[in-house]
Length: 516
Image (tube, rainbow, N blue to C red):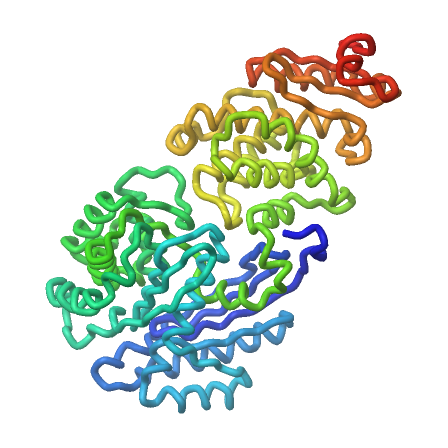
C-alpha cells in the first residue's frame, strides 16, 4: 500500500448467486479490503437437477428460484446497497431454456442477471480465494452442483481456468451413488490436464467440500471449528475421503456439524476431491470460505483498496471505536515495529503484518466490562470473521489481544492454543500484548503522547525513553510495572530513562540517564 493511497472506502454491496443447486443472496459491508457478511440467505432450488437427463432446468426448481429472487429483490430495495451483482452459473449457462429463464428473471424482478461463462466462473472463484487469503498459490478448485472449475494461482495472478462437468448433477443419470463410475469419469477429465495443473496446494471452494472439512475436524478432534484456511495434509485427506465413500446416508447425518442438505452430495464430493489429489499431485488442501461472490467484490474494488491487507483492514474495522483517534493503531505499530524487528521472527515474513493487526485491535473491548474484557476479547478475536490469516495466526492475535488487557498467564482455551501455537509463538504473543498494554497505558491511548517516548530491545534489557521534560509525566509507577512485565516475558531487565536536550546515544545512557 502506498502512502499516497486514499483512506479505505466504505460501502455496502449485494450479491445474488444463481447456482445449479442453490440460489443465494449475501449482503456485505465493505471497509476497504475487509468484507463483512451482514446478511446471508440461501434457497436450495436445484435448478440443475434434471440437466443431465433433459438438458433443461428443473421446472420445480425454476418456480422455487423465482420466488426466492422476488424476495431477494425486495430485500435489496429495502437495504439500498451501493453495488448489486446478480450472476448465474453452470445450470443456467448450459440449459437449453437458460436464456428464457434469464429473460423471465429480468421481466418479473427487474434484476439484471449476468450469466457467467465457464472461464469467468473459474476466474471469479480464484479471485474470491485471493480476497480471503492474498498469499494463496497453487490451484483453485470450485465444486458446484453441475460443474468443477479449476484455476491456477501464482504470485497473486489468476491463470486461465477450465470448467469440467464433474458436479453431482452431472451424474444424476446414474441414479444411486456409484463411486467407481464417478471415479472413472473424474480420471477421464483430469488426465489431459495433469501436466498443466499439477500442484502442491489445492484451494478448495464449495459447500460440499466445506462440509467435508467439518467432518475431518470431527474425526481429528480439531478444536477450532472455522473452515476458512483450514488445512488438511494429503494422507489425512485421502483417509477422510475414503471414509466418507464407505458411509451410509444415515451415518453421515449423525456426524455433528454436517449439513443434512449436503449429505447426498458428500460422497460425490469426496470422490472428486480424491481424484484431484491423486491425479494432480496435491500435497495439501486448504479450505476457502470465499469464492465467486467475493471475487466479484474484489474485482470491483478501487485499486487502492485492493492493495491493502485484509487482515490489517479487518482488525482496524473491528477495533475501531467512536471518539478514539484512528491514528492510534498506526502509532502503536510504528512505536513497536523497530523493537520487535530485532527479535527472531516466529512467523517468518508475517511478523510485521501480525504486529500491525494486533496494534489495530488495541482498542477492541473498550466498552466491555473490565473484569471480563480480556476473556471476551480473546474469544472475539479467535473467531472473528476476518480474512487474511491462518488458524495459528488467529490464535496468536487472540493471545496478544488477551495479554493487551491482563498479565494473567492462565490463557483461555489452552487445548486450542497447544494445538495451534508453538511455545515460542505463544510467548511472543504474550510479549506483543504486554508491549501494547505498555504503550496504551503510558500514553493514555494518545498517539501524541506516545510519540514522546521510544522503545528499544537490547540484548539484556528493554529500554523505554522519554523526551526532555516528559519523564515525570509518562514514566511513572504504572509505566514501570508494565515495562517490567514486558521485559520479564523477553527474559530481560527493564530500564526507564529520561532524555535531556539532543544528547548523543552515549550521553543518553550515562550522564542524562534517570532510572525509575
